[in-house]
Length: 384
Ligand SMILES: Nc1ncnc2c1ncn2[C@@H]1O[C@H](COP(=O)(O)OP(=O)(O)OP(=O)(O)O)[C@@H](O)[C@H]1O
Ligand SMILES: [Mg+2]
Image (cartoon, rainbow, N blue to C red; front, top):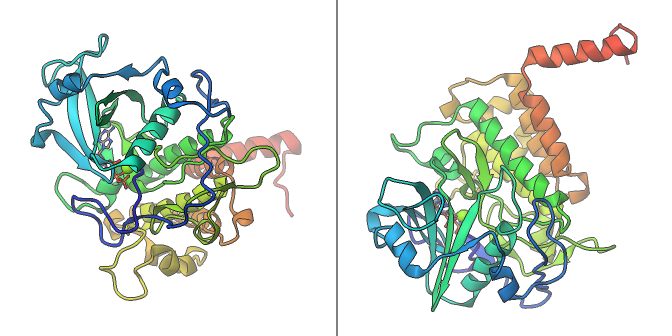
């Protein structure tokens, strides 16, 4: 989750070039933890104390012992992943009482355990509880509870059986079969819906850490966003942006955010464009193993995105050509718009959702919609 450093990266097989960063500037960070009781689409905008956040009624406060039992003493073979925050373990609890059960029975959970290294981790652990404790949507991962005991900080989530989109796109092993075109577009749409939901919430939440490792997939490849450690309430009143320390993951952050620290919902739209490009190309946002000129995915791919004849050059070979060229062109065009250097030319996430919905409609449906529409107006195809 959102632990950010300038000089540390993940402890387990970090993808080359993909490091988290934090600006050295200490100014301008308005911690804006918001208030009030749980509701699906609203985080009211009054700051809340740590106690208020933790008392959030629908999360279980687990004891450390319970989580130790649920994960069989944090057995190394229960580790399902590792990120900047710490290790993630698989565990089991009873569906109703939420107490630990025998491995393989009851509800499967993912337990994220914070490495014991300081203040920043605690802040992000709390941000996760603040946001995921209040927001609920089919495309946000469900937080079941947390543990806050002595210096232990853990988070307990629903278990996402297929792991992260990052693993499926970039890991080469028999365990991860290449994602089909339809699944890729479904992941893009699900994730876009998650972001649109955040942007439309009362607090206009900005996610700030959108990337393929934070998109988790359930058994049906339904995608959900996880990791709200860097999320922030959006600007209020007539403010155009939120001023922040510059934090995020190299390769995904919007250029104007990196230059100024000014955060807006359009920063998420840019990161969405990068992820869409990763889904199309099967290449990482940053990859130092590629030839010179191809390290940065956006810089390399942008010129091809709006050229009908060159689009195949950026498409993932692992798709083996199994995609409609028209759909690929529309998806590439959408990525291009999201990656506009000037944020005002980027679409909103609502617009992105609409485009992806259209893109995924079977051509017969689109045709009949067009015909239906024309039928209502004058029964003829309109020429412009
Ligand atoms: N709820 C979950 N269910 C199943 N697997 C999970 C869950 N949460 C995390 N994981 C696995 O653990 C891995 C590590 O997750 P984590 O969020 O800690 O780090 P990350 O997103 O890879 O990196 P970063 O620290 O930069 O966010 C994920 O990539 C995923 O494979
Ligand atoms: Mg993560």
